Length: 273
Image (cartoon, rainbow, N blue to C red):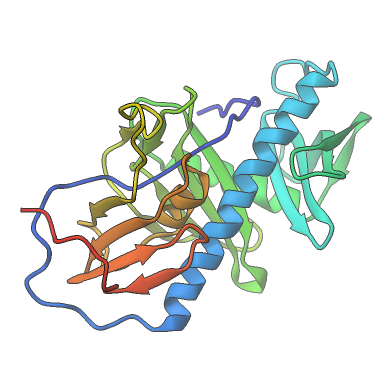
């Protein structure tokens, strides 16, 4: 499966299912668990933004790579901002050949683009991330929609690979059908596959009656007992930005507009029937 180089801004949610809330509440998750979900979802949203603006910067710079030269985009965050590299694996997957590099400059949406001729040979994170992407794609069976990918570093234990539907229309946000893989540090072994949500649906919050303002979204989980990383991603990327309530594990979680998660908030809506 090829991922488009011109990776546009994504906005993900989870599959919506109008089912009753669980009759019994599961264990109350710890603050540390919820903070970890917020942290991953926040970085995922940053990755999305960086990939989107970096791809646009490459195209605006007049760079139109030959077919296959910029097959993969890989973003990484540092103390000074995001860097996004565009390239491909060599024939024996021992190097990642970087053709273009976009570095965040004076504003979150501004990226300076550099071209490498000959291509830069990378043997670090870019190589391991590209291997992990290829490995995840081999076993991925998504729906018949475009998908995008993100790889978040997980330290010495491995990396997280996310596959989720791409936004292709302004104001229309596809959600659901997303998977997270936990992959070995060298990108050669899948340790765990987590199906986060099921069917892909669309949310169109921009198309509201004139003069109305959305207050929040609400959905329930059928696969997991906790909010997922892409639930936080949804809140941080969907416009207008509003909280999202998630029914899971017998609890109602509120994901606020800054990505923080609360359990059973006092203003939670009643469960669907």
